[in-house]
Image 1 (spheres, one colour):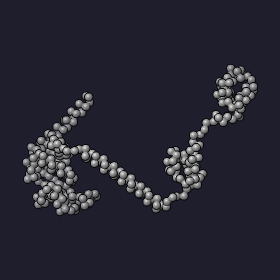
Image 2 (cartoon, one colour):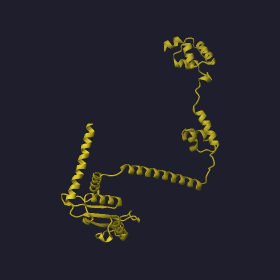
Image 3 (cartoon, rainbow, N blue to C red):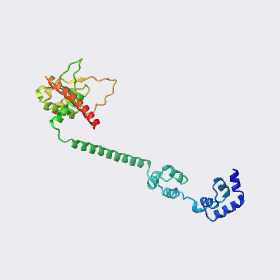
Image 4 (tube, helix red, strand yellow):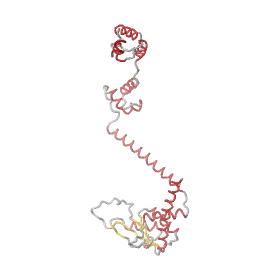
Length: 291
């Protein structure tokens, strides 16, 4: 402190020089260098009360945006429209134009609702189109299946949906149930690949007792290419009044059960192939890690 005081003994004389330089348009840095004042507190006291020259004042980058926002608001634009036009936040726009009157709505509430619903409908249609295009591209990318590919697909599908043998309940036979017509078609094609003839297949419908049973039987018989009379007795599921069923539309046709007689050897082949797939996946994983 003693050094600072001794250095600036003639404070009033130094202040006069600083004020003169300031009024000549010099910046704080220029005055500091000109007078060799390296203490900011002293420099502040020397320039106290003296405004900075205009050229040293930084322009506010948002001033132009603020004026444009106010002009757009006077034209009746909403915050959303102003944001799109200027690219600034709605919170800033709100601060800049809050003293201006709110523009009159361009649409009645009914018109606004109709426009909103139309926009949502367009959005849903666009998204549905994207979904359909993605599915179509994926479908076409599959191409033709070789017999080996069909065999592996059928094995995987059976292991997911078919009846399986247990150590506590031996069931070495092929029995498959599903409600998806395309899944049933694929399973039938797989059985054909395995050499299973239709006379070895026993088919029956499994459906809720409150559904259109006769219609379901006709549907599955036609899909399987057999007369309705060839179906075994339909299994009816009792309705539980404590549960709410959602599969009650006209498209509900229950499930088709397909049982193959004398199929123990085929079942063992299917199960062995499934574990072969699992082993191949593990081998591929180890190979990939070593690479």
